[in-house]
Length: 437
Image (tube, rainbow, N blue to C red; front, side, top):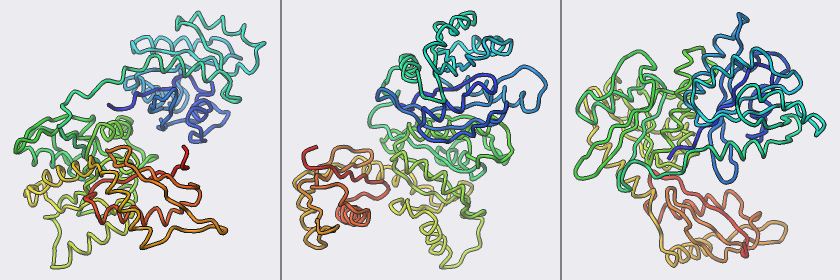
């Protein structure tokens, strides 16, 4: 199931971005002591008590006519709509303001679990300032200091207690879940319709027509599938509708729910930087990937056009060297018959499990062919290898010192695994651990 979503909401200048950065563990949001600095939602991931979640930093909600406030209110309301839990941040030094009360009214309408964090409670002597915030009707206020990291554990304990239970998906285990991701107007909805043979999804030439992830279950040749169509992802910072901005998080949710991700590229427009960023989401999530070049019918071609385009993809998507490439046309249905068989194949590879004895024999042969690296007179020694997970296939190498596992040798081992076993379309994870761990 997709990760739960936590939205951090509050009027400007109460320290939301500082708390966001503390939870994420790195400086992602712009932090400046001016109201309205965080003008856009920022997404990242967090983890607490072994629960992973997506995190949204919103521009503050404020009632008034100052610049950006209407847009920030709209974005916060969108974040509220999508969040599983809301953290309402107020400023402990300033006390309850009329704007806090207005924000509280908006939050009450959401009917979502709300955790009240009173920021800038920097020392125990300030705890008495919490009592005033009971008047907001949000339950027990939790004193925190974003600047010093105080109280965030208590805050996150309360947040996690409100997350939905980790339930199984609505579909059978044998069902292959497919998401289509890509920039707006690359033809994702048209591909869905062409694969299904009917107009199940609205198709429009206007970028951003698909506002949400849409599930479409179907069966083909006895295999059950679910197609998850997502709104197109655009580059952050470009001026476009706030609802379209929100499509990035929805696409990330769709990727998390998928077994196989179709990264759709527009043959007419070629490859741009944003295509790589979008594909990176699927790779980082460890999903099986097929690169689909749509609108192939629109190009004038010779006998080397496909080969050149494929090489261009390989040059740009070095991290997806394992992903097969299909050239199709949703409009003419050219080569569409190859999509589902390829999806089924990479899904099987994504779940492939290698017997431990076969795995260790392979590694012994690989080491004999290419001895392990040395560093300052010390040589890497691989004692034992085992596969600990599928989706993606994950291998733990028990070694004398993980620091000696150079990335180039790790790549060599991955290539040997790929040469020996059928891992087309799936990433592989290699983890080096000390022998006794």
